[in-house]
View 1 (cartoon, rainbow, N blue to C red):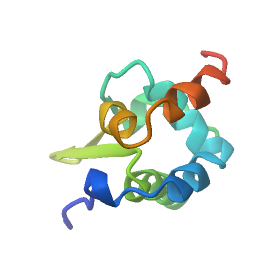
View 2 (view 1 turned 30 degrees about the vertical axis):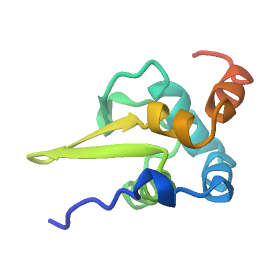
View 3 (view 1 turned 180 degrees about the horizontal axis):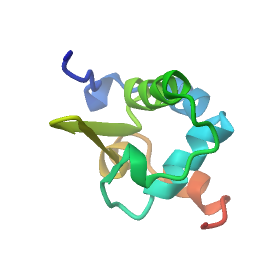
View 4 (view 1 turned 120 degrees about the horizontal axis):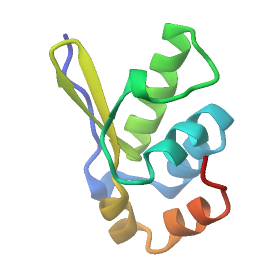
Length: 103
């Protein structure tokens, strides 16, 4: 299995973060992770159920620097990089998440 690629905080670009969050499925994933808890892909309620589509969405979020993915066996644990994003772009994620109602 390939190791997961996570950009360094200094390499994260705001335009990539905003692009990644512009998709409703990806935004749904982020909203479900905003409590700061790490979750497996199976614990998330995601509208699209096709594995290849979900893999794409998780990859876009990870490569944009929004999420961190930890693999343990066959499970993928996903969490938000909120602290790092807050240092890189103060207030941006707070503002975006404040506009979305909790589930």
